Length: 214
Length: 264
Image (tube, rainbow over all chains, first blue to last red; front, top):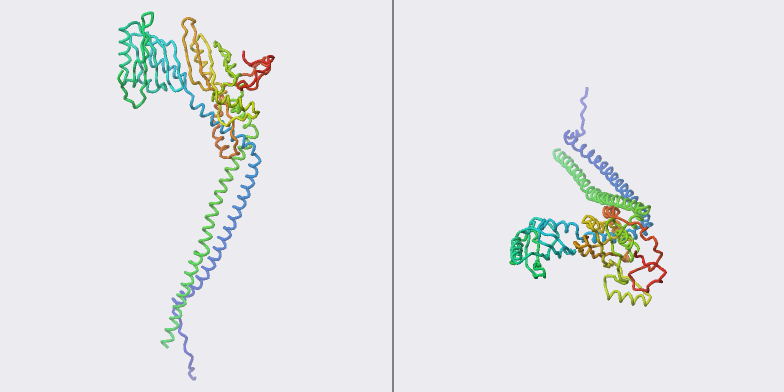
């Protein structure tokens, strides 16, 4: 039996690892390209979808604007009402509470004076005429800090000259205890022998230490 | 033979590197030129949509508020606010309120005394008004106008006096007390109250309708509700008054004797 001789060069087989790697890379590249195409299409589709939504919403806004425009007269009336209401609020805000001020006066002096007349201005300045009905005049220090009353011009009727001095000393003692100022503006001897003294009392406000000389 | 093998091996390696390079280029290229712009666009679009949705919500709410106003609310609000602060020198609500206050129990209110033309702004304004009237072109400036008047009342009870002061601030027609005098008359055993009051009217400025103002107005609801609780006096207090000047505070000729003045 003659021996067969193969003269063709035997093709060198590639190592298995290289084959695998090559195949993996080719397939991987194809898969990746496919994925990228799909993802791009998906993203593009999503962009189109969002654009459509946005267009619809823009159309809705235009529609709402045209509906709102039909209520222009209502807007005009309400705008004026808003301005007027704002003015009303300011007017309400600047109102002085006279009832509280009257009550504060009662509390400030307790039952030590009897008020004949009182005039209160919205700036918190009080003109008051009163008689002394207790031995000493009391003054509620805490109330002085909370009331909206700023100043009191108190015309006080006292019986005689010794009572005059006592009253002055009495009111002077409240300086730094609710009053930042207590001064005598004027005094007069009446026909009946009593004295009318006009005091100028400035109420101390929170943070003031305030004693000034009489 | 060895050389052939080496070349093949090298070509294999080049192919591998080439494919790797292609992959990396594809990834970066796609990210840089396809994904990034589209993702940015998506982000912008989504933000736009969120903004549009909010705008729609706001506009829908605004539109339904306008519809609500148109149906009834505005009419009621106009009634309340225009009574409290008229847009012109409305003497009717002023007199009705004055007369209504005078009907309080245990209070004797002195008749309204107010000179024609007595509007704060005083002589100069009064003169200007006279000139304008004579020239036949009376134009009032927009804004808040005020005029002062005095109210005198007597009562025998402290509680009634206090209730009267409270009532002044409870009336819907807005008043401001600039000074209050309280005198205890021992001889007559009564309390005399003298109140310096200011009342107002507001000439609206010429404005363009503004959504901003409407929205601000929407937030004033609580105050308007409080205003609704204020007291409106029955117009029956004006029974018997047949007519007269439209504006008691203008400098103009006294109406014919046959007309009533509006005072008790």
